[in-house]
Amino acid sequence: MNGKPKGLLTGKKATFIIATGGIYDAQTRMASFNFVEPYLRTLFGFLGVTDATFLTAGGTMALNHGQDRDTFLAPHIQAVTAKAQAA
Image (cartoon, rainbow, N blue to C red; front, side, top):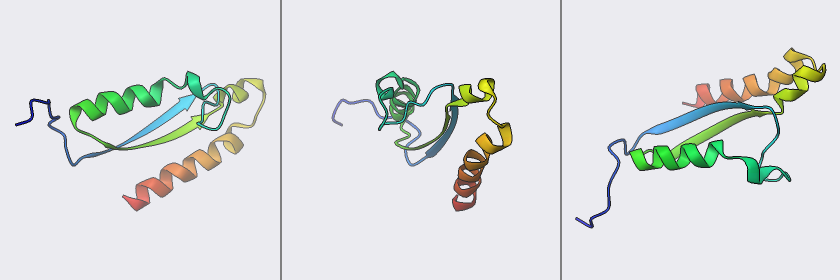
């Protein structure tokens, strides 16, 4: 044994569906403020889950400024549906 702890959930997959007020995608100026994904990757990695998928509906604040809810949700619902069908 190498002395390193090993999580008990090895071989498992996790899909996280997250909504954020801002857009914190990797290619944006606000990427450094994305604390949710790294935190969950670290936490679940410690438990042994290393195959994690994140489906993020970023920019929900736009709904407070008049963007149509159905128009905003359509691509996110499509992504969730596609992921569920692929599983």
